[in-house]
Each structure stands twice: as C-alpha cells, then as structure tokens.
Amino acid sequence: MVRILSIETSTAVLSVALSEDRTVVSERLCTEARQQAALTAPLVKEVLDSAGISIRDCDAVCVSAGPGSYTGLRVGVSTAKGLAFGAGIPLLAVGTLDILVAGALSHSERSENSFIVPMLDARRMEVYTAVYSATGKRLTEVEPMVVSARSFAAQLEEGPVFFVGDGALKCQEVISHPNARFLEAFPMAGNMAPLAYEAFRAGRFQDVAYFEPFYLKDFVATVSKKQLW
Image 1 (tube, helix red, strand yellow):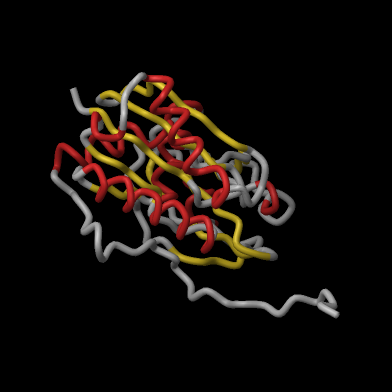
Image 2 (cartoon, rainbow, N blue to C red):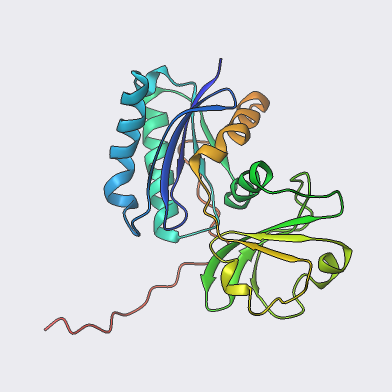
C-alpha cells in the first residue's frame, strides 16, 4: 500500500487529502478565499489526525504544481517541501490542470469525440488552459489565453467540449457553440490521488531543495490604492 498526503492550494479553494494507493481515505477543504497561508498546516494536521498517523507514516507528499495563484502555489509548495524534508520522504508534483481533468473524468459523461478543456481563472477574459482528450490525455501545451468567440473552434466542430474550472463560467457568454458544456469546478486534493499514485510508482520524484511551482507567467506586484496615512 502506498500512502500519500496531497496538498492543493492553487485557487481560492484550499484542500488536503490522504490517499492509500488510488483511494482517498481522508480529506479536508476550506472554501474561504486567501486562507492558504493560515490554514494549510492546520488542515494537514486534521487529515493526519483523522487517520491516526503522522507524516512519517506516509510514503510521499504530493503538491499541486501550477499554474494558478502565485501566493497559493508558494504556500503549498513550501509546506510540501517542509513536510517531505522533515519526514525524509519523496516529494511529488502534479499539474493543476491535470487535477481538474481528473475530477472531470470521474463526474462527466463523455463520448470518444469529446474534449476536456480545463480553465483556471487568470484575470479579465484570460485563463490558463490546455486541450485534453476524452480519456484525459493532454493534446496541447499549457498556456495563458484570452478567450474569444473563436477559441477552441476546431474542437467544438468535432464534438462536445467540456470546459471545467473556476475560469469556465466567465467564458460561457463568449463561447456560444451548441457543443460547449460549462462546469465551474476547482482542483481538489482528493482528485490528486490517482495522479500522485502514478507519479510515485513511476519514480517521478522532485528535488526538495530546488523544485519550484509552474507559475506560467511572471508575478506582477501591484500598488495598493489604500491610503496608508
């Protein structure tokens, strides 16, 4: 049995899960925005305590690698690194869009000619996205995209396209093709279980010292409009 602790902090929803092989045995989540820094560690403790184990009883720690929120990814990766280093266990990482697709595979009905397009909200009409097959195989590179009426036209002509993620609904008014299906969803730690298990079995371990999240775009700092005095 392979026991893996998974941490997902890339969006507004924070989640932590413990899995045994491909099966989730404990999961905790927080839907309140911007709580990653405050609540990631407490949720990790809750998940481990609920199973009656410590982090040293796990075989690996897996973290959502991005793209997504810059701050959220930093918190998740830092926490996962600390846990892996302290317990002397491997660090795993899986793509955030892959996690969204894993969730869609378990919940949506698809035909062989359909596609899954995960969308993470960036800003305005921009999303982080890629095209996946009906079986979850990624067909295009992960990229930032400004969504227009012509986006994903080729896939929409071939068959149903399932747009999933926190960036999906804002594109609903722009993409009006009859083959378009929209589902608001968030990448969840529980959906990381099969991906983490496959990464562990394949030996795709990350360097605890040097691993960095996949930000996709450089972080841009903004100046607060609030008066400080």
